[in-house]
Length: 336
Image 1 (tube, one colour):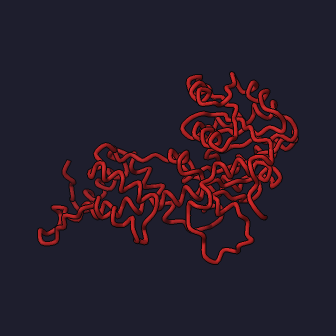
Image 2 (cartoon, rainbow, N blue to C red):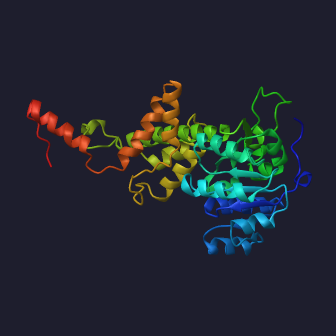
């Protein structure tokens, strides 16, 4: 494909709808690259905060669209579900042929296919973009997984290049063809047609669930090595924060997740500020559904999702049922 495009090769003012932690920091990172934004959110304080930093404020969604010159690009960064559905539906009546609407949240990939088809009837393009980077993305950059028509992806390449971490974020991959697409080594990838971006992000997050669960279980095993349930001669008092710190260097399990975990343990070795209740935002469920539909065995991804369900239960009915069965057939009454 050749070199990455520069900011000056396209019209580069973007509309941003949704100014939470992710949306606001996307605007800030674009500004650092000289790409302006017109911004709007239901919360006027969020709009005012970015306006004070140089973004152009809009009073509502129609006003945001009016302030952008065609061909427009409007990025929606809202929670999956009704909020995103409403914004995309409204944009369908506000945008013009040749414009593009972008869903950069954690949307369901089948919704992306449906929304793209609806907008296409009006001559409006749609991009579904999986955006990874969280609260660290402003400093580190965002990994972008893009689905949609190639022409719009190419037109907006300078935007994606500005948001992405860049080639220096990781060593070059030995054996990768020097003439291959230059975008993936910079941290963003055109995954394919509409739906492909959010499908890829769904799988990404499901893998994240599995990695986090494996790490958490291993740390629990380290933390319980000195349990009183063990014979005294087998008890080990292990320095878990120091172990994770050592693992960050040269270990096969070294990763950004481990970096963040070591940081949390350095601050509080007991992690006493956390309840242990773990939420899920939808991608893990959709990934398990996709695995079932495709007949792809995914035991780790499934177990990691179920572990999150379990973390939010208190005295679950299933455990009480197990106790009742054990007592019924063996007279084993569990202590209360």
